[in-house]
Amino acid sequence: MKTATLVLALAVLSVAAPAAACTLCHSPTALGVRHQLLQHDLARNAAAVAAPIPLLLAMILFAVQEPRRRIEG
Image (cartoon, rainbow, N blue to C red; front, side):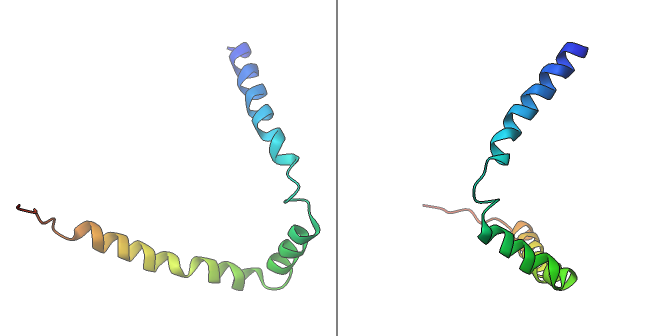
């Protein structure tokens, strides 16, 4: 069991290694974007991102509850 856990841990670490090498995440532009999003008003930015989620869920529920129509041809 220890061997399987070790192999799984090594597999996870080897997959995560390319993400650390991402040049986009460590660029000055990425740092600026993170600064703008997180430093000023995190609650307002999070609310702006989350605001459309209830509307989207309502649209999905509406589409699911609509009765299906058969096409006769």
